[in-house]
Amino acid sequence: MRYLSATDIQTLFPMTAAIEADKEALALYSAQKAKIPLRTNIDIPEYQGQSLYMPGYIQGAQPALGLKIVSVYPNNPQLHLPSVPATMVTLDPQTGQVSALLDGTFLTQLRTGAVQGAATQLLANSHVQKALLIGAGGQAMSQLEAMLTVRSLQEVYIFDRDVDRAYNFCRQASVKFAHQFPTHLIVVDDPNQVVAQVGLITTVTTAKQPTFDGNLVQPGTHINGVGAYTPQMCELPVSVLQRAQSIICDTVDGVLAEAGDIIQPLQAQTLTRQAITGELGQIINQTLPGRQNEKDITVFKTVGTAALDTLVAARIVQQAQKQNVGTIFGENK
Image (cartoon, rainbow, N blue to C red; front, side, top):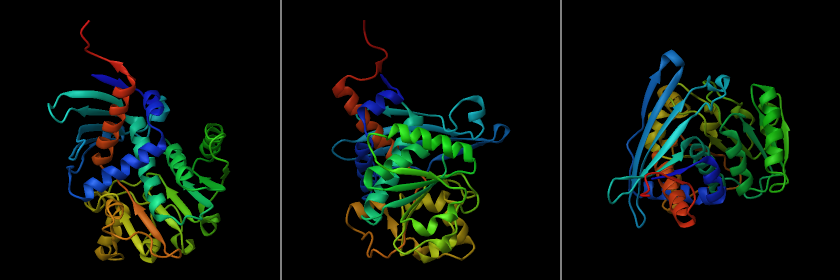
């Protein structure tokens, strides 16, 4: 059995590879070549946490089988621990034996950033130059990297309720991407100060109220709703959903079961089921059109799916086996 740390994964699998793997996973999912039960969420109220179990199997020429165990504990940073600790287990589809363990925290960050990158690549206007990133927590760095990977952005505005965290994030990102992306990062006190100036918005928080004013969004803007993953959470304003020409999901079933952004307006009858256009995998498979006009407002909503974890992890393990990267347990001496 092979163990792959975050450093191992970074060495093996750049963001560009993760975006392509995510696209492959969603294309297979939408083609009904994946068996992905809705994840099991267990509340841990005593510690204000949640534990999630995400199994999956993907068919095809290179099948993938795995299980991700991920928890969400917002208070963990106070203990100097990640707020979203996770472990990914991959199995050999032919034998069912465990083949590898991966740092699931980094894998989650990578595949979640990459799925937003895939959506931005397919839906955002190619000429977009300014973006807004709302939320500077543990998922933010990969979200920023994905946006910068697929679009040549001149400026990215950063907002977080904790202004110190926003500035610290910008300092870290400026160092990390100094030689890769010539983008100016700017902290703002209020996201609504810049919503009308940007053509790309990514919100990645656990907010229970919309994180920006949808009425300020300009025609042609693409919006990624990444953070909200329970019926109680809601980052996206209903006003922008009502104005959008396309609302695209990573998986429609997952979004309708878990995303408060969509569930709440559907229940309030301020949004209709017909407003949900379809899945990103359908666009990749060319069974559904993407952006139709440069003036369209497009929205991508993701709650995550084990299809992403399972296939991305499998592709990482394949690279690790080829390059003999990682720590091997259980070898015969």
